[in-house]
View 1 (cartoon, rainbow, N blue to C red):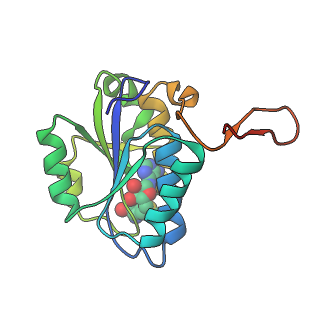
View 2 (cartoon, rainbow, N blue to C red):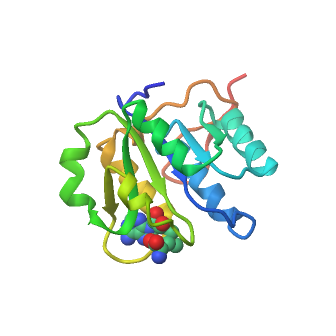
Length: 180
Ligand SMILES: C[S@@+](CC[C@H](N)C(=O)[O-])C[C@H]1O[C@@H](n2cnc3c(N)ncnc32)[C@H](O)[C@@H]1O
């Protein structure tokens, strides 16, 4: 599916240790969805996470998907076969601000983010190793910035379609519309 921004973007989380890292994983899903990605691929999925994402789609709209995959490597191979540009986010990569112009020329992407430890061959398999600053921080922050750059900010205006709730942006307070 191609989104309103004209880009088809999927996210791959590389690495395990989800049990200890459940909150980060949830945030990766929420940020991917809110910032215009279609789906996230995970090697391990907790039922609670699937249910949580389903509830968010149900309440706020959209069709964001969570998929369990056999391995990060086969997911990258498949993505390349589909013509996706594979971007690995790492502090050791080339600065996003230097590569953004080149990247936005493409329409289909797989963005790979790591966890506590990333296997070395990811760096070779990726088409681009991209850094959001050359400082250590978070896969959630790096993902948000790169999704924003790839879609030139258009994702901020994304419409999520039919939903149980819709926020009416307000200067003060909370306004939520509940279409019947
Ligand atoms: C906690 S960091 C792990 C850092 C680890 N030492 C490594 O191999 O890069 C988890 C993930 O956050 C992302 N990340 C952290 N800092 C980043 C940066 N400056 N630019 C891009 N991605 C970054 C990467 O995807 C990384 O795999």
